[in-house]
Amino acid sequence: MQFALVNGTRSRPQPGVRGTCPICGQSALSKCGSQLMWHWAHHGRRHCDPWWENETEWHRAWKSSFPETMQEIVHFDEVTGEKHVADVKTARGLIIELQHSAMPLEEMRSREHFYKNMIWIVDGKPFTNQFELVPHLLPHPESKLLEDVVFFHPLANAFWRRSESTPDSSMVEMHRADKIAQEIAADYRGHHFFCWKRPREVWYSATAPVFIDFGGKELFRLGRYRPSTQWVAQRISKQALIEKNGGIYSAFSGGG
Ligand SMILES: [Zn+2]
Image (cartoon, rainbow, N blue to C red; front, side, top):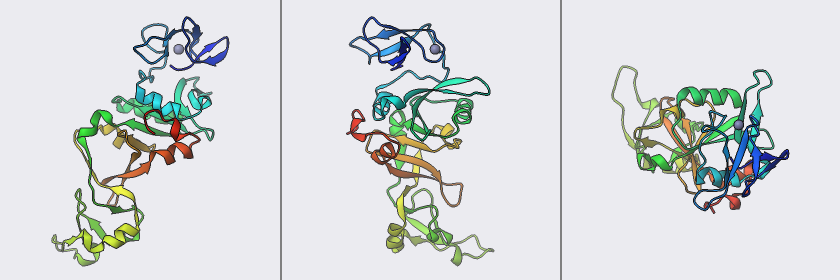
């Protein structure tokens, strides 16, 4: 944790200082060595929040791009009494959950149910080599073009037209995508097909928006395409997402 309570005030760790966990009230010890990032260690071997992940540099980079008042916010369900620490909570009440490691489906569902108004930022570094964006551009999913045009999945370098197909035939005429490059470009909003080998299936079941961060200036938002069995990734500016939610991109450590 970056924050524990010291005399009732949210505080960062300092050498030799003892604090208390903002969730359960157990003691928290400041760990201020040279090997690891300074942090508060929860009393006992496990954190009291079962959803807590050991923090990585990646978590810190994301949290640090938001004001301290938005980081590690205790979220409380008045009905059930359940408490968890949200990684980031924006001024508008949006929860931003940062997920580095693989997560069981049940936990993903519980967290979405608990936070409701939330988005996921997923650390893509562990599976960078398994994920490939197909370079061909696609029109956005609501584009009028898609009422007729169906792209071949996953390469998207060719398409067929619904208007040219007959119900009793399984044959369609194939066209090269570059024949309609201008129309595609006019409706391009960053969408691409992708190939994800051994995917983390849990993210295909998420109902909250999922943004994968491979460490560059862009995020890839997962979404459904037409026909709805196809998945697309939409390129999103990391800076835009951070700033839209009240953060400061230049504070993103290592992401400038
Ligand atoms: Zn605790």
